[in-house]
Image (tube, rainbow, N blue to C red; front, side, top):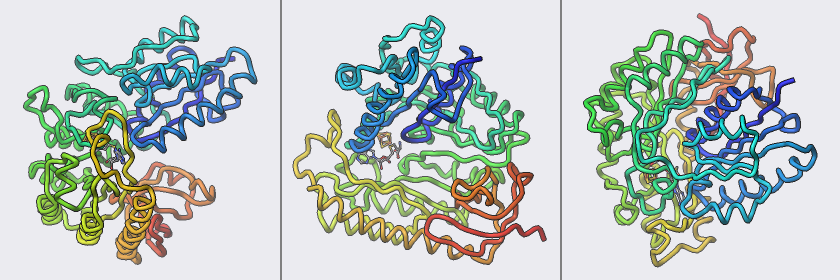
Length: 439
Ligand code: SAH
Ligand code: SF4
């Protein structure tokens, strides 16, 4: 019987994609995937260290895996991703979790396969991302998957004052257009209907390489892949959002009318201190440009409260912009001080209670905004890409509209993987409910 691998993912879609690549590597080495950790001989954990809370939670869970290891001799535990790639973190991590067999950088997938074949636990692999062009990952066989993540650019050349990502993922490196298009074509041939193009800032695709092919070009080519119905992309840095990209999104039917455009803060003073490279007015102008070209476009965002020195008045600007833009969705975070970042050394760190209280107010406002978007869709019929049964109730199906609203409705297993017209009957801030409407 073949050995089994269980993948535990923490963090963003890039971490999810790392998990898929490591899974493919383990499969090349004779493992088969299991959804039950207790059956597994190998657990691979992909990690995140963007905020301290995430880091602590993941370290706690890695700690618990010590029990899992002891239950059966020969079990292997491998940890990869941002947490491992932080400068100087490895020694600290090894002391804290000595039961981990393999610490490995997300870019070291070939090396990981070698370790599995050699069956050599106890290995620690240098984790810094390579400076050269990105390694091509193992081809992904996305069995039965309807939506798949595709990396187009690794790393980040921005220096947002709060952020550890440039330190864990290295400088920007784009995947050659042919590699991206080839992967997308293979995915579509294997039945994938939606791809999500991933990068810390997809808008700077090809910039470090000085390629003629920019992101707007790539998006158009991907959108024209036969068999592919939907294309999404994330993340778009507002300072680099070009008119050409907006035009492509408006012109290509397969490109979903959705922009994830992290604002982070509404006050110009805070935006400057964050080193974001735009003002609130510039951001609003970009939003207007999107809505002129695509009136139905949803704009979602990331927001941070309590950046060092943020006053009540500054925070008021974040509330004001949240209301003015009317985001369809927002990921809201309390500022987390990360060592090695520029903001960690700033005076005026905001007390935890103030950050908590601002987060509560911001979340309440965003819940109103999210609800108002969804309420406007009640009574309309939306095309939903149906991805599978609902997690909470297997009698219901689950999918997403082009605008990325999660939608739940009664349906048959044959509807999975299809674009289903759904009449929206009821909504809350997070989910829409409806019924199939094939008229
Ligand atoms: N590259 C993407 C996002 C990367 S991290 C971008 O530029 O938007 C995802 C989100 O985590 C960020 O958008 C930011 O809102 C949040 N984040 C990053 N570092 C943080 C920190 N130190 N404290 C709180 N939130 C943080
Ligand atoms: Fe971090 Fe800014 Fe780069 Fe996003 S753009 S990964 S927030 S440094």
